[in-house]
Length: 403
Ligand SMILES: Cc1cc2nc3c(=O)[nH]c(=O)nc-3n(C[C@H](O)[C@H](O)[C@H](O)COP(=O)(O)OP(=O)(O)OC[C@H]3O[C@@H](n4cnc5c(N)ncnc54)[C@H](O)[C@@H]3O)c2cc1C
Ligand SMILES: *[C@@H]1O[C@H](CO)[C@@H](O)[C@H](O)[C@H]1NC(C)=O
Ligand SMILES: *[C@@H]1O[C@H](CO)[C@@H](O)[C@H](O)[C@H]1NC(C)=O
Image (tube, rainbow, N blue to C red):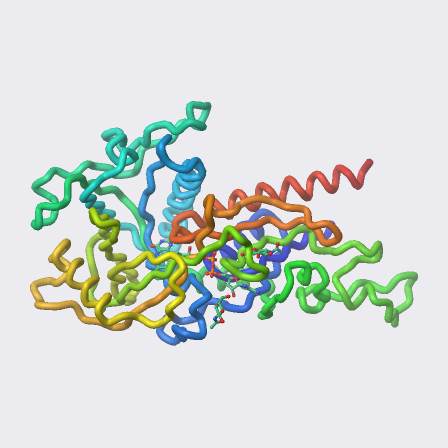
């Protein structure tokens, strides 16, 4: 039986993770995208500003769900736990190539919210409204509360913890996923789509499919069915489309963009450190590993479309981080700046959209976008949910066809 074809729109971390997992589940997969991962060092900051994946840190920072917070955070926490498990497997199987580093994550909070204060000694979040059920949340690996003697010297931090976590070098990691996908038979089409429905009418050649065998033994059929992706019965051969377009295509009114300015420095760091300041600002570092230096950040500015980095912001970010975690300086007076970074986090009110939709006259679309500042840390959890929904849709259609 021929494999079902799934088209994934997008080759950021979300599209790539979905493509790799769909392939493992037995689907033939074509990725259609405007941007593909390439070396970070040659990625153009202005031309590629709407492609978010190169500009991420990227680390996993646990965000504990709590009854007082939006309920999607519990789903998202489960996604991050699933992602952690898969990152561990990938890292252990390919320690030198996947672009993943396991290390300690350190959190410092000046004014901790109830979700932090309610964590159990092993990092089990307070059960949220929907989780009183069968599947309780587990603790966090390597979790430990810090004692005040371990807080930064300025005296403003009032709560801290550490745990085991991972960081990726984003373009090393995404390029690894892309190579794995292609080596296992995945197809790529570099194309900017104007309308979502377009994908259902791409030609078989564009999707990387062989031409349809001619009907009735004629070898020279010129029927239109051989040029577009509709089968002999006129139905699209695309079983499902995964919409991992980040912010792309026709605007979703729930989407916003959260600007982030960070700075890449040459120094390494032994941990990924995040400090939440009382004024709502953030001070953090994310070591990229693989000779990629360390990201020091960073801002979160909803609706600011300025693509240019600010020199004053950079100076402030570096100063604050060096004060919080002087260890990164290794005794030197200042950090070695390699590059400023500005990125746009594809943020969605109500949380990431991970749900299926049947578009009349077109077909089944599984949405996986709006990951905001958490695309890497939720990636495998999202991809698992995507495979599950595509399986369900395909099985339902097959059951329908047999009636
Ligand atoms: C400064 C900063 C720091 C961050 N730090 C972290 C972190 O530490 N941890 C973490 O988990 N996340 C972090 N993030 C967030 C993370 O980078 C994003 O959530 C993630 O990259 C989003 O991935 P994506 O695949 O959804 O979107 P993208 O990477 O933007 O990919 C979208 C894909 O869709 C394609 N596309 C879009 N429109 C079209 C179209 N019309 N036609 C064809 N193709 C199209 C694009 O070409 C691209 O291939 C950070 C982000 C920033 C900016
Ligand atoms: C990025 O997206 C915005 C909003 O859709 C658009 O106005 C801008 O032209 C895009 N930039 C690039 C470099 O494509
Ligand atoms: C995919 O998501 C974008 C939002 O990022 C939306 O505008 C677009 O219509 C969606 N595409 C499809 C095929 O539904």
